[in-house]
Image (cartoon, rainbow, N blue to C red):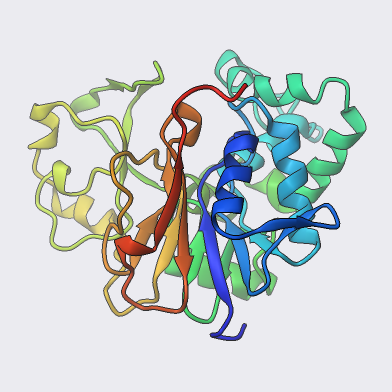
Length: 320
């Protein structure tokens, strides 16, 4: 890609189609021949177009049309991956009927999507087929893109094994074994890194789900306590936040040092004024579907990211 090409990286849409249209127009994109386009820039969607929001089907059509007509790129989000698992039958010998178990929590996460496609089953099948084509990561000339976590080691292994950045149906089936190579790739790149809470403790998040793990940063600089590595919307209780990391736990942590190219992620439900996490790391998910912001970063090849390059639309009320 030429360095003169500008890119607009857009965070997790989650079916907020009207907000997406406002943001595209604010960024200077207009509809030509039914597709949003810009004369000199392209969008990169960070994944998670589906689930939760009021206009999932319409959002998918906008995004896929842009990708297929060359005005956008996209990486896979964990919600597209989850949808593939939920809708793909397990092979003979499995204890489940589908790759992603049809339990109450999983059903609740995908319910809005399935409801909105209830009268468009052939379209939904087409979109599921399209999800297989979504890259798991992008390496542009000046920067990188992944939904949740850039893991150099896993990405290098994936490229060596598969010669690209896309999975197939066999890889999807293999990824249901969490400790397998496929399972590690999909879990880390699309969901991020985590660490088990000490002493068998649990925390209940704002989503009502009780967890034995907490999400951690994939960049670290001499952390000493859990608070130094936590990266999630829900805070750790004080006694856990102050818990000291063991040497073994420190060895589990990833790093992303200042010499590496800027990397963009979504996934993490950020809040407050959009700004880079570090000079070369930016999260562009600011909880649009929870009445936060749908955020874009206008990337023009700079190696030090700037808060002045963020553009957003505030979601102040439900889309009508």
